[in-house]
Image (tube, protein in one colour):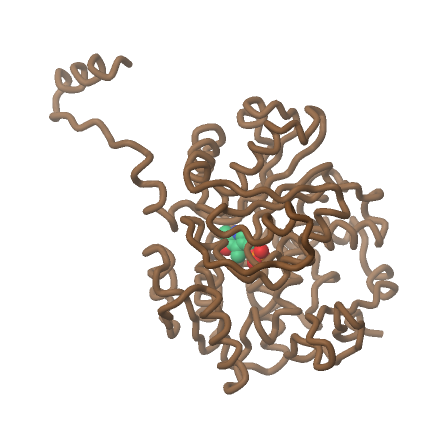
Length: 411
Ligand SMILES: *Cc1c(COP(=O)(O)O)cnc(C)c1O
């Protein structure tokens, strides 16, 4: 028996074959992978996982691929850091950071979803991969396509950060910069996906792609000695990552790899693009799309596909969804760098700023475990932080000049 039963509609539960399809033709609900957990239960154990590769593929039994992985063999298994300095500032004894800012190969959590999507795309027979991206996804699809010999098209909003545009071009995919927001890019790509036989990682192979995010929960639980944390803080763009972190903990629980899960799942958005936080606070169960205006471009999705599900999970687990201003995002980036030596991008600034906001609101008890997900690297969004980091001391190449400067600076 196979571990993958097929796909099913998240809304009406209608079953589908495990092909490159993503919406239910009856109710237009999103499709999700259906696993045979009895088969998985027979195969999986803590021991087997611990002897597995030091990558996300140690959890292959819970990922939607049928054969050996072929893409992203060095992806995942990123540092899990006990953040003692930042924890002290925020009054938390057990604050942890899952540091995907150093994920391989392209320094963001998107390497996880792309490893799974491209491995599956190859299994399904595609020779061309594509995506609609807020930045990091395009970087990862471009790099992995180069290594795995796929033809590649990436579509991005034209106003992306320079580091993210260059971080596509260097791998020589076809880069298409669209005059519009991410939501415009995504709408265009849905149309293109209907015309060309390509694997659009976050459109027609989205059911497989999104499963890669579960590995952030698996790695967290394993690093905590096979248990789920009390709280997590997760950045929200489409909302997929948040829903899959929840799913990952609950799959581990279901397979008796960890004790029962009581993790409170909190979401983080930028004020300039906070449709999910707004709907959560107003207790609405539909999302009013917005036009993004924030420095957190990687989270700038105005009409988030999984926002509704993210709200349900926050509500069900007793979590909160908060938003922070661009000024707070920059402060968050600096707070993390100065205390923990980790340079994250604007999305990480959102996460840290929301973590701080929740800590100041008294949401976390001092002795509870809290995990914040640092999903991207600061070198990619330098323009956001450049005006806020000061400048070096300029001196002449002699001791006198150095000593004068030391005195002037009061050091
Ligand atoms: C894409 C992205 C996210 C969130 O992704 P969703 O699954 O769409 O919510 C978070 N952080 C970074 C850096 C990203 O690139």
